[in-house]
Length: 119
Image (cartoon, rainbow, N blue to C red):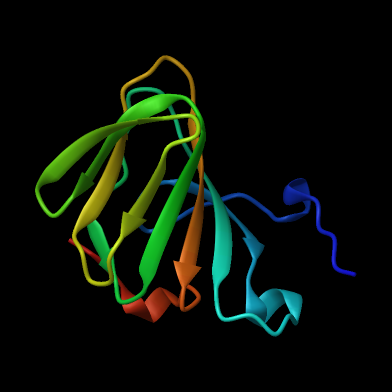
């Protein structure tokens, strides 16, 4: 059985300017999985930088409200919204609320720094 508390993963500022915790990653957690999960946070009034990944991403929003921007299309997001981002799609998230925008990023295949391009 594998159990990990999200607070055991150190928070850092990612290249796209989100606050991240890598909570599940096969390179760090010695698990036979092909995806990774990060816990992300954007402060009120901030946005991530436009970027693209070679992998697909699924964002699951846990708290707050904002706008998801993918390839020039924009949609409102809030708690319980799920967004799929295709591989190589230009994307960013902006927090339009008064509290942190908190979400999970599920990357498949798992996130690799060298496969992320900040625009």
